[in-house]
Image (tube, rainbow, N blue to C red; front, side):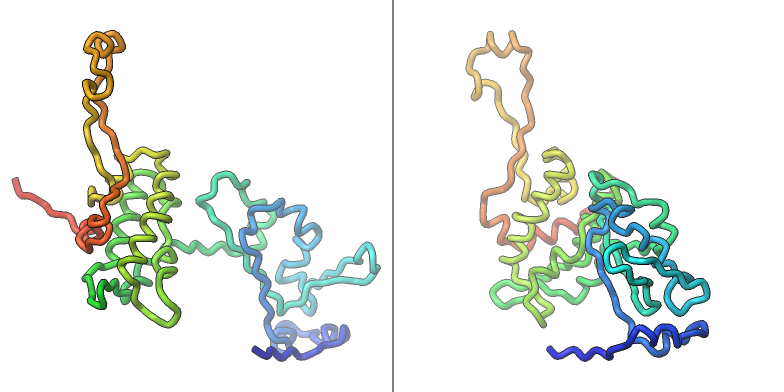
Length: 262
């Protein structure tokens, strides 16, 4: 891919004297900083914190420049540079955003958008399974929000990653991999391996197996059971039966709920 750039001399910025003139003669450039809150933002930006303010840009009303310590050249931020920073608010281990940075950026919340999956079909043996990924993600996220935290909802990109480029369909086999290797491990981390809650998020669809562990099968000795005051415990495990994972009904059950009238 060939990209063309128009070259400007330093004096070109000085010509942009009137408000907005700089925007008209210069093409916009975008700087994207991924996971911007993972570093010490104040130290990373330094004096740039002030220079990135809209009114302090080159060609603006309160234009401001600083002298670089090594080259001794004057430096300013052009008005055609746009800085975009991404951050994951679900990561609680990261320190909060510096107040000075908050004043200079607009914050736009980007929550999971289940509508992105509306036209995404799931097929098995070249046939449509009828699985509605949009409804599935919406139900999963509502349960996560109810049981845990709104910030921990699952993004639609999990499912889009299973599509081949240029296609709007995903194989059931790929959907199985997404649940086994991405979604369930994520839920295990969220709920600290509390499988009862994971089972609730998945609407008891069969991916999580619950069984009672009989004490006699484990210990045999009634005296030991009484001495330790042991009680029957519910045990959970991830389904190993491939028929569960390969059935479209397993996934449909996540978002379809049956209600009984009293």
